[in-house]
Length: 425
Ligand code: AMP
Ligand code: GLY
Image 1 (tube, rainbow, N blue to C red):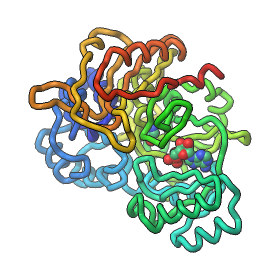
Image 2 (image 1 turned 90 degrees about the horizontal axis):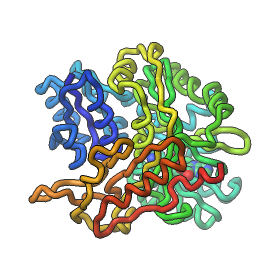
Image 3 (image 1 turned 60 degrees about the vertical axis):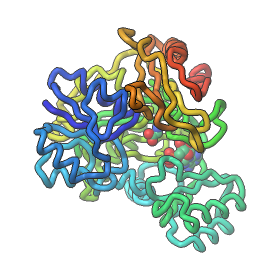
């Protein structure tokens, strides 16, 4: 088979690594890809939002399956473009990717189908939002831009003043562009966060092993929200009891709700959960693998990813026995100092040879490229995801942090407390 992967981050590197293990695959392309991905795939210089060009490429090269890694093209309807051309593609259609593309839609869906989530109201008029905040709101409160905002469109406001500023930022100043035309105001929840990714074929859902992300830039969950500074898997807080609850009240009900709405979901549903004192509730849905969740979940998956993905596309997921290793994985993101605000790029990196032939150690590239002399240089805020496995979380964490030392670059930055929460479990 020839497989095309669309995207260019650490998640797509992990997907490419996983696809490369499949005996069914003999050629991988990635558009646009990055320097690390080029170890497994021929990188093609077409942007992820250039749907027609991507479809032309897939048709011309005889690509048998295209896997969409990123949210923007899914929400923009890339799957519909490929399907209209008769090209096999993995991911939700536009009318289903709205589960991630519109928080107002997903909140209304959960309300209609009694799926546990925080209480909320949707607003498309800033005056009405302000009136609600002044008269009915309890603080802290959460403001969310409706649309995609690179994981940054969520504001937790402790006071009315902060919330008033938030409404201005999102709805009037349009800090997140049209994503802020509509806004969700939501009850603040407390508890542990867990990410559960799942494969879905329109009717059947198979969940993967759990993971937890660290979204803030600095140790102790301080600093700004980022795309994710590190992950561990499994989450010791995701107990069998929690799993049973989520299966009954969240996972299958979400898939059934989408089918019932005439929006059958095929692809990955990523459930962002909060384990609140009243039980698990949905924080958000994503319509793709998490980044850097994929970097800890995929190395633990036993199945051939191509078989699972094809079963999703063909509607035969019920016949797949999804299995994960009985081990643990930790991923520490190496970022550029200053991320997520301002940082230098183009800095040479050293030490990649240290990962050669080391079982259970992975160096997933996020923002990297080759310079004119063919050297690896940094090319983004999140640069690399260093993953290691171990027989348990503590061992995986020790291994991952040891491996972060194998790579050097001048403005290397990382959190030192990824997975620290497991000490409390
Ligand atoms: P989201 O993009 O919706 O996952 O939100 C980003 C982050 O904001 C989440 O990972 C949570 O840490 C936090 N968050 C979102 N919604 C809530 C909520 N209702 N209560 C508390 N924290 C929240
Ligand atoms: N790591 C969070 C996300 O991918 O949305």
